[in-house]
Amino acid sequence: MRYLGKIFFALFIAQQAIYADVVANVDNTHVSFGEIVTYNLVLSGEDIKKPNIYTLCGEDVVGTGSSTSINVVNGEYKKSYVLSYKFIPKKSCTIEAVSLDVDGKIQKTEPIDIVVAKFVPSVNDDFSLILSASKDEVYVGEAIELTLLFKQKKSAKVVDNKFTNPEFKGFWLKGEPKQEITEDAAYVNTKVIYKVAPQREGVLEITPANIAIASRKNTKNYYGGFFPEVKWKTYFSNDLNITSKPVASDVDVVGDIEIEASADTLEVNPNEAVNVSIKVKGEANLEDIKAFKPYIDGVSVFDEKIVIKDDLLSQKITFVADRSFTIPAFSLRVFNPITEETKVVSTEEIMIKVNNAKVKPEEELKIKREDKPVAEKEKVIPQAKAFINLDIFWTAAIFLAGVMIGVLFMLLKPLISFKNEKKFDIKDHKMLLVKLMPFEENEDVRELMSVLEANIYKNENIKIDTKKIKEIVKKYEIS
Image (cartoon, rainbow, N blue to C red; front, top):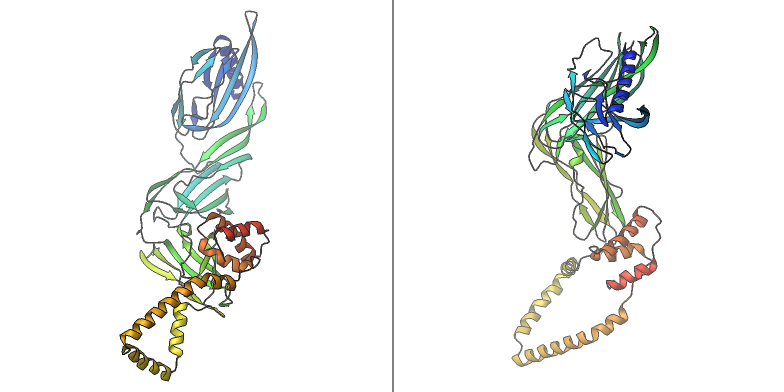
């Protein structure tokens, strides 16, 4: 009878096309939850502007089709078109009227009511989907597990299937879902486990997952015989509501983590690179952690992007300096949702020794003063007292002489500097990188520095235009 019904439905469409310019209909107005409904627009005319229909009854169109037929009416040939749209209504609804332009006239279809029977899961169903969460009340950033269980009867005949994951709006999806398959006496059970973490506070909805199943069934035809037919039906899971609670604003991470930092060397020559690797591991919202890039006076710091894989966050940082320095501890404030306590986890400081390091002028002066013999220091005091007792005339004379010497030195300084100045070799890329650092805020300098860093510290072989280097050196008066 179903096959006969399809014949009558096709004849009904053709008959409507003969007597009307625009007709809308569906293959079934009463369906069960998950069944596909086909919405047809029958159009007759010479100049037809086809509509753009992407949703019906608030659901996305999952398939489209079209066909053309020619009918004879009173000895005249009349062409008609049938546009088909497939969708899956999840509740009873009304397909709104559609306006179309046919031969320059706007015509409107009639609304169509669709009745959807409420889905009631049964232990005897061939297929079922069940969605569950390890917790339904969590903190922002706290990781939880969602389990989607798909049950399929062993006796069910499946030709094809199309699976759609649930939507995780407002959540981070952490890593790839894991899959487990088990069997019992009647069913094959497939578990898909997702690890997610809420991005914001509030009640967050996880929409149902669904799977469309194509099954082969034997259908009785008009003549009493049976023929195989493929029938699609979509099965939906339940939805979930997760309540997400806020945490303190000064918290960096929610969960339970460990942090470590290690340097590839603790002793280098001036302007050689020290590479530090930072690792954060544990169950936490690692996506919220900002890049580590400490400021150290007199040290150039170059950081790479953070990399997150499963429960491990890693970052590499390069330090370059011409004197010894200390890399400060890296720390994070962590809120543990189980104990509801906040603590600070941190690494140890890392001392870096630079051989033959330059000494700061103030340090050099201090060293010289401390290295003077006691006897020599004592001689300074009487000389200072003697100078105080000098005659005013001689004091004025010495002062004028000092001024004249200072003026003479200032006049001769450019000549002396010019003779003694020794320009650095631009082929020494390590020294060039150091010379460029004070001008790092300029875009052209940053571009050149990034290429130099890649060649020096990452062993890349990027060609550098010598002419461009000379232009930058001249532009910023680098010597």
